[in-house]
Image (cartoon, rainbow, N blue to C red):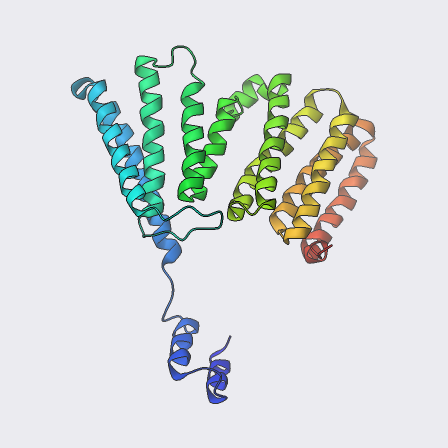
Amino acid sequence: MKIDTINKLHTEGLISSDQRSHLTRIYDGSLFSLYYELRTMLYFGVLLFTTGVGIVIYQNINSIGHLSIIGLLTLLTGACFWYVTRQKPSYSNTEVKSPGSLYDYVVLLGCLLFATVINYAQFQYAIFGERWGISALIPALVFLFVAYSYDHRGVLSLGIAGLAAWLGLSVSPVTLMKEGIFGEDPLIMTGLVFGAFVCGTVLVLDRYDIKKHFTFTALNLGSHILFIACLAALFNLHMDVVYFILLMACCAAGIVYARREQSFMFLLISSVYGYIGLTYILASVFMDPYGMFLYFIVSCGAIIYFIFNYKKFLTRI
C-alpha cells in the first residue's frame, strides 16, 4: 500500500485521521514491529542459560558435588513449573493465548531442565539401571503432556524428537556415513511405523478439532521421518517395487493434503522425496548414461516449471 492510497482512503472517509497516521508510520518505515526479534532473543536466552548450566556443572563438578547439582537443577525445574502453573489458562482444544510475555519461554526452560535432571541422574547414578532408553522416554512423554497442557508447539517438537530418540531413530551424520546405520532392517521398519503413527495420530486429532494448530508441526516432523524411512528402505532392503510404491503413495497423500490445506511446504517435500525415489528407480533400471542425461534435462525443466507454477498445483480439489 502506498502513502497516496492511504490519503485517498482518508479523503473518502473510509479511515479516520488516527488510522491514517498509524498506517503512514508503518508504510514509511518509521514504525515497525520488534516481535520476532524479541522472541528470537528470548529463545536464544533460554538456550544460553541451559548451555551455561552445563558448562558450570562441567567445570565445578568436583567442588560442587553431584547431589548438590541435581538438587539445584530440580529446584529450578520446580520453580519454572510453579510459575507457569500459576499463570496457566484453562485447557482448551483450540489455541490458547499465552498469558504473559515470559510464559512460553519458562515452559521451554522447565522442560529442558527436567530432561537435564533425568539424564544427569541416569548418567551418574544409573537410576534406571542399564535401561538407558527410559531416560529418553520419560522426558519425551512429559514433553508431550506439557505441550498439550500448556499449549506449546516447541515442546511438542521436543516430545516427538524424544520419542524418536527412544526408538533409536536419532543418528548423527558421522555415524550414518561410517556405519551405514540406515541399512539396518529393524531401524528402517521402526522409522516407517513411527512416521506413519505420528502422521496418522495428528491427522485424527486434527479431524476432531483437538489442537489443530499443532498439526503442521507434528505432521512436518512425522512426514520427514516417514519419507526418509521409505527412501532408506528403497535403497537398502532390495524390494524396490514394494517400497517405491509405498513412497509414491506417501507422496501422493502429501500432495493431496497440500492441496487441501494450500500448503506449499508439504507440496514441496512430497515432490522432492518423490523425485529422489523416481530418480533412483530409473537409474537402477536404465543404466544407459544417455537416457539418464535426457531424464535430468527433462526433469530440470519440469522443476523450473513447477517453481514458477506451483500455485496451479495448490488449486483446491
